[in-house]
Image 1 (tube, rainbow, N blue to C red):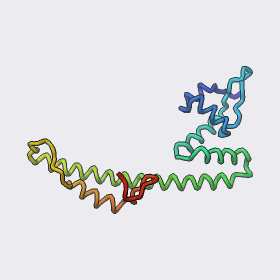
Image 2 (image 1 turned 120 degrees about the horizontal axis):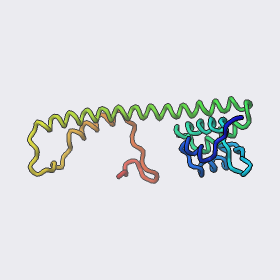
Image 3 (image 1 turned 90 degrees about the vertical axis):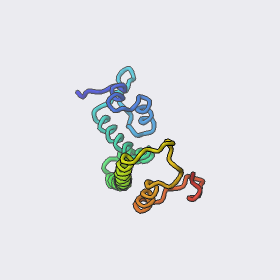
Image 4 (image 1 turned 90 degrees about the horizontal axis):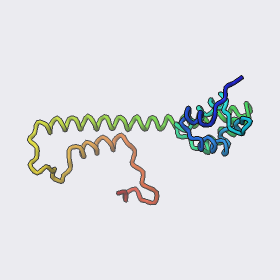
Length: 168
């Protein structure tokens, strides 16, 4: 006989709250969970496997509507395997694009950190300012930013309702 877990045990193992588990069941992400004679939910190992996959989808940024669509296709069995594969391939492409963007950002940050270390090394050899504040002027950091960030990064997006040139 297969061991079943209570909602509290599943919540502890997955990091989801009992409320979220009930919500996932209500919206169709999780098929109706079997119940004990007293009506308490009992999660089987297959439920745990499916929850682990849903958590991966959530971790990679798939919206709930996408997870619901995938769950709906999954409930159709092997007849929908091609659609599910296509859906996962599209999601994987989105994840890969985000990873590439993050890698570019990491490179810019690494370059900026190296630049700051070089500035710090120069500053340590100079005498500190008596006033304690720097004069208002463009710094070597500003010049470095304009050279590296504009070349490597796409333009920042305007906030909704703002023109690109009217950012604060």
